[in-house]
Image (tube, rainbow, N blue to C red; front, side, top):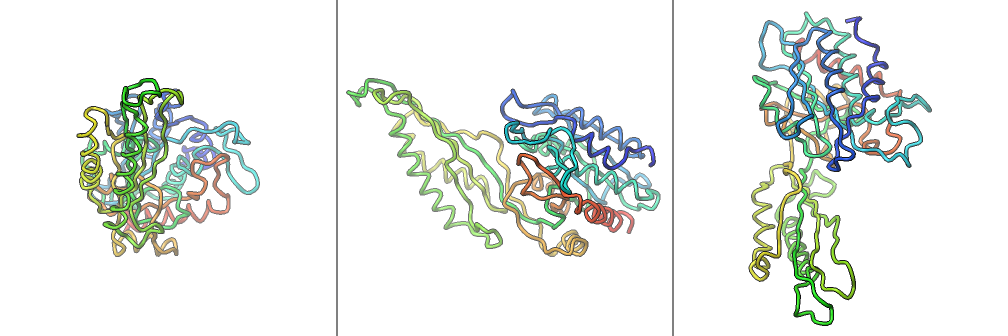
Length: 386
């Protein structure tokens, strides 16, 4: 496998290629160049590679690289990660986000921790292996659009016979196993009223007034969620609902004709999304009856369910042993529920710190590279060469 570039070269080349996911089309870019680079490297070391363009996002791609000893495609280990990054704020970065820069004992660059760098770790671990010693399949999944819609993780069924025993998603966890996180939904409530002169309120329908009543009902929903659902493993042990963005109206002397609210909810693992939507829509139904056609509610992206892996699972016990760290929950959201739907025990564990994710001057420390590399290599050996 000497034909692979060096670890630092692979790391640098992955960071150097923009692959931004953003709901704003002016920021959004294809991840094809990153996928092509990864596909070439995995083919070089003898893996079978399949690349699929997404149905939901044309110009975005998933890649699955597979090494299946004896042609057996079932079982083994899946190492998974996303190839996209968030946008960057040029005004807050002090270095070129697309140039991997070593300084102060750190490697700086967009995606260095979250999480294009993970693929360099995986390739380096494989370089150290004698693949002929593997007895179980080793697969590497690279997805698109995790930072926005998770469209890539929603299309894993397009990879035939992808049935690993275990999966590890290499999000930055300081190589400590994460076995639980909340889900994520984003809803939009849009009130369409009727404009008019402010001197005669009866001549129109004030969308801000209606929104005031909507928010009152949603606050009751928020309290019901906190009372009905509890998971003490989380720092905030109940589902949250946040009113994050509101706008409407154009002048103080005009009846507001339109008002819009965006709200974020974080459902607990195992919590039914259908029940949540029934509760939310049911609470607003009386207002919709009072104001026919005025209140529209829709999801701004497909909901992401919560995720949990049993603490006594074999992959959790192995990860705790290798990392010398107790498994824990996380506050952020990952592709874990979609990977877990493949039928495998799934954890989140990777190099770098989540505190660096989505931050200007994102970095990973040099000191954690060698220990992280060793843990990833041992993980592969313990599962696929046992």
